Image (cartoon, rainbow, N blue to C red; front, side, top):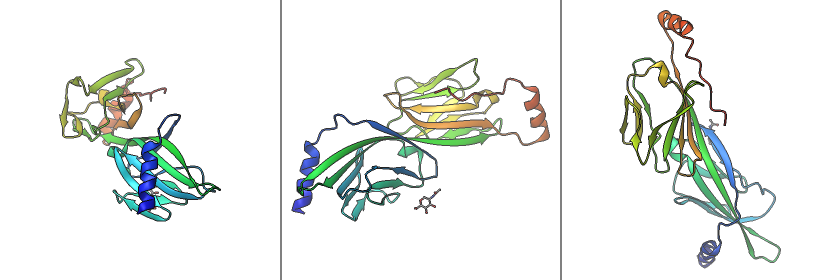
Amino acid sequence: MFKLLNLLLLMCLYSYSGTTTILVSGIKGGNVTLSCGSEDREMVYIDLSRFKSILSCHNEECESENGRVFKEGSCDVVIKDLRFSDAGKYIMRVYYSNTQTELEPQTLEYQLCIHDEISVKKGEDLEMDVLWTSADKVVHWARRSTGQKEDWSRGHGVRRDRMTIRDNNLIINNFTATDAGTYEVLDSEGEILIMMTVTESRTGPVDELNYINDKTTTYFPPST
Ligand SMILES: *[C@@H]1O[C@H](CO)[C@@H](O)[C@H](O)[C@H]1NC(C)=O
């Protein structure tokens, strides 16, 4: 216990300066690995935090605040069954023992982006549970000619018609072909948290025909 307290103190004294952000992305429902990239060194203590600590491991013993987060190998952390609410910034602190038996800390910062694809029928409501704590803006990329449009922002709320908010959900009522495209949820620094590709589902033969006749339903993903 005394050792652990010392480690915690060291962590407090260690500043974040000089860290670079590692961009990682995963698919909703899938797994992602936050890799520390130092497999061959002896790791003593590891702490992963997001707003607060969510996983801490002392040698092989781990305590997790979230059953979906666990350590794999020497210091890789896996988050399984990804949800939109997992998107955002993570900070990992890893302590290695060096030859003088002193601890050598390393801080890694990750930005996790979650992708998803959804197909919606014309006239249905599209619900996207994307408005989590870090969400600052939602932009919509539709046709090339119209470019990017801001649909929602924390400061201004909903910025278009047929769109409502309920809890963490952004809802588009009475879906039409013009609502298809890519929706990006950005944090206050402009980093992408969630990228959702929405297509109009075409099932019946009548819909199929309409689609072929409608030359405007060609969508382009954002160039970035
Ligand atoms: C995610 O990880 C868990 C636990 O290791 C595994 O059982 C599951 O098959 C993985 N899922 C995918 C989609 O790879």
